[in-house]
Structures are given as C-alpha cells and as structure tokens.
Image 1 (cartoon, helix red, strand yellow):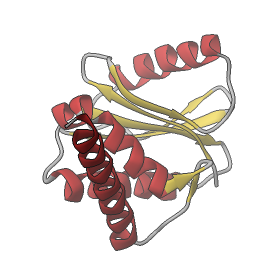
Image 2: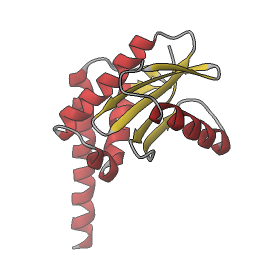
Image 3: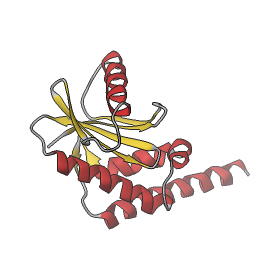
Image 4: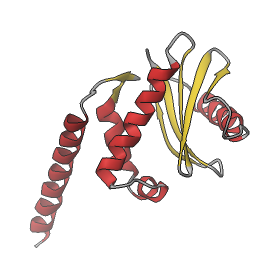
Length: 155
C-alpha cells in the first residue's frame, strides 16, 4: 500500500498542496497534475470516487471547496486510501479548528507538517490521532522558541 502523490485541488483547478512520494521529473509532475485535475473536476458529485489513470488508481474526495486526490498503485485498496485522506482531513480539522481552504493557503507549512507526521514514503506512518497532534504541538513550540530567541538577539 503506497500512495504515489497527494494533491489538494480547489474547484477552480488551482493546486493548493502537492506532496510527491515517488521521484518524477517536473515535466511529469505537471502532466499528472493537469491530467488528474481535468479528470476529477469533470466528474459529477454522484459519481464514484475511484478512477483509473495510466497504471495507477486515483482516489479522491471533496471536502467543502477542496478535492483531496491521491494516486496509488493499481493493486492497492481504494477504501484504505480514502480512509487515509479522511484521517488527514480530521487531523487538519483538529489542528486548525474546522479547516478551510484559506487555512491551507496561508499556513501551508502546517498542512505539510501534518501530512509528514501522518505519511512517510506514501505509507501510513502514525495511526494515532493524539500522537500526530502532539508532534505538531511540539513543532509549534519549537518554532515559538526560535522566534523568541531571534527577538531577544535583536534587542
């Protein structure tokens, strides 16, 4: 079970976050983003959340105005991938307090931190919601300490 990439896409087709777990050239990444976004945005709301793209499966879910799109191996279980997407959204909801597209735009580093705590090399690294939030809280406190140190050095 390995996710190759995770893309957060707005309804207008703008990429809000992209994480690649396989090595691809920038040209290939751009082609995948273009093709997958066209495929997903063209689908109706009542259609299945799984589709085939080349030799991978695309699993997506729409939350509010964002599409969470994961590309995984063709032999992987789509429902597990869908659950991983849902777990990521739950973690962001707890951290941001009802996450919205603007939260991801203006503090995208936090969205990447949460994703990095949840997934490692496309595999689910941490299944405990509490541990993920604890690690993110520790990262926040480290950042705050660094900012305080910089401020005291300037004075």
